[in-house]
Image (cartoon, rainbow, N blue to C red):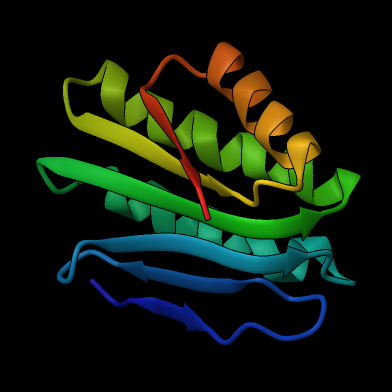
Length: 124
């Protein structure tokens, strides 16, 4: 399965989706200009991954900022991961936040209430 590697830029999050290495992460600021163009390949990759996932999937969310549109895309990503869990695979979200950014922690806690998979909140 091909991997997705997107280098983090000013308003583009870094993305690593690598089944073989077991690395799944989003980093940086997520406010891409063209949402469909940016997120559709990620959604398609996750759909393909769900056909033959690893036994354990740990998804690292290391965002420092995301806009409303990206929050909806993030929810869709988390829902796809939740579906894996529903199908019997182990899935966990590591949600990183800065100690000074309570809003990001609260946002993660909100997602954790919506998505029925384990979240670990990790202070940077």
